[in-house]
Image 1 (cartoon, rainbow, N blue to C red):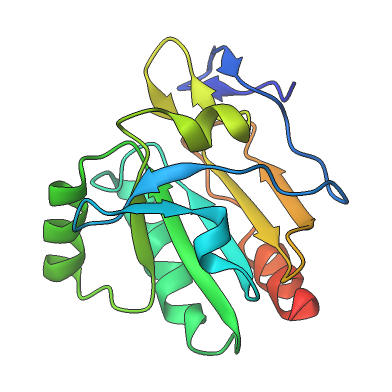
Image 2 (tube, rainbow, N blue to C red):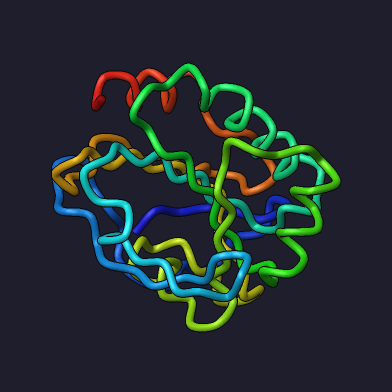
Length: 166
């Protein structure tokens, strides 16, 4: 399992670490209208999945804004942001922040994504900051587990991986 810290304190990640070259695990999360979204709902596209502890915090906000800005230049890439924030809070935040190129998804109900991708933080019931790129054949082509949850991911590497998978 990936070893991460949250504010420099070690935390326990639940689930299985995802590796490049593996088939992407199935997940079930909620869209902002409370409809269920699964990996299969986004098939035949490249997916850049940006995972944040809470969209309403500084680094998480910056991460979501950055991928929102980049999304239009990525072609046939769907950008998804996953957190355990309630769908209502995600919708409100996106409207206030002008986020239109990223779909926010909530893992609050089952931690399905968090456990499938090994990013559910046991002690906090949050998701660890991470980024995954999944190609149109559902193969993981990029996986980054940010070692300190309050740090930024490697935006350039994730964006390049998404472009290469397209």
